[in-house]
Image (tube, rainbow, N blue to C red; front, side):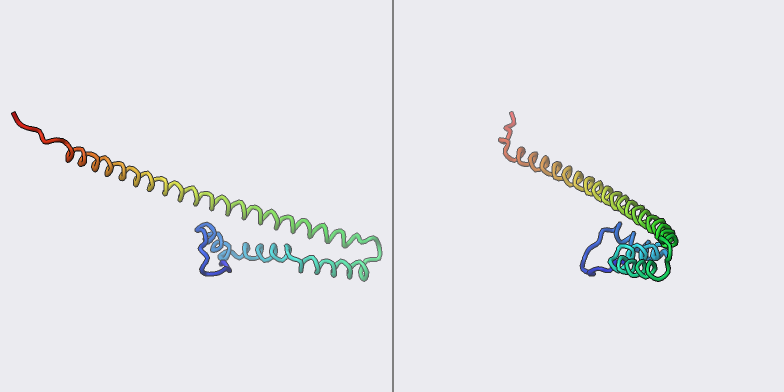
Amino acid sequence: MLKTDPKVLHHPAVIEQAEKRANDFQLRVADKITAFAGSMNFVYLHIVLFTVWMVVFENSPWPTLTLIVSLEAIFLSTFVMIGQNRQAAFQQAKADQDYADVNKLLVENTDVTRAIQRRSEEIHALIARATEPPSHGS
């Protein structure tokens, strides 16, 4: 769920997306991995691991480390694409919701404008009749 100030009003698409992600195990795991992979702790951990690996475990020009780093890059790029797809889906849902809201407001505003026009015409007709000179019968 959203971890923000409860006084903050969130867009319905944001709430729906957060609930969807909170209810799906795979999405929660992907979110945690992407959050960690996008942090400085990830960078520091890799600096330490790569340094230890190069100094302690590798005798030749690091072929095993190169393989491990390449595999990790493949998986991390997949998580980046998952995040991009998730963001695109969220943006589309939010855009659809905004479009529906704007159209609903347009209909409401049009109805109000028409009602005001009708009332204005009725008032104008009443005033016009009230200011007409009385007609004299012959």
